[in-house]
Image 1 (spheres, rainbow, N blue to C red):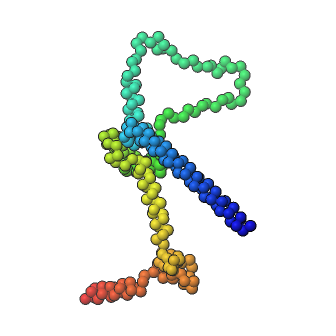
Image 2 (image 1 turned 90 degrees about the vertical axis):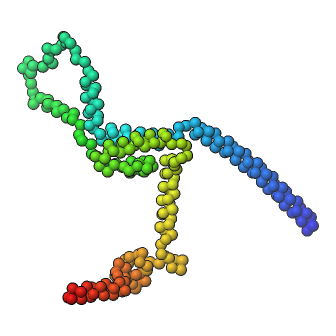
Length: 258
């Protein structure tokens, strides 16, 4: 019976090894097929990107920011455009409706009038108020992706618009891959910020593998913190610094008296 069990057990393990080997071969075939499909998709995408204009996204971003800031803050230019349109209008000669006036309703013709009547409608002023200069965080990020400095006042808007137009012209002259794109710059900034966060947490003072709250990096929470091991001299000068300061003051006093 023992020999029969061992023989059956060996056959079962042989079948298990055969099934695993078959699954491994099938997985390797599927993996190779997936890699070929991914390589074909990557090649097709690279070919599609090669047909596009280099730095098209950056050029559109420059154009968008320039138009947005011109429309929002450069009110004088808009008024000049309106005046130019009015100059092009040709006056009508021998207008038959020149002496016509709008009809005014006679209030005396009303037989019975009750109440105070309707209040006169106050029309809102059509004068355009001066825009308030304000930029959000997205605008600062977009200027940073282009390598430009955003304007900090209303007077610097025209200069920024000129820089955006020049930057768009500069992008149109660059070859593909010569300068980093906005997407690459954004990924690099995110990676640098993540590294800075990780470095800040890893650079905390440690002692014997544990966080040392008695170091100068941590302020004591109470006056009795020295009893619990917290640095009671936090924010104060070291004794050697106090001695050096006292010596300097003494030397200055002697020089002044001399």
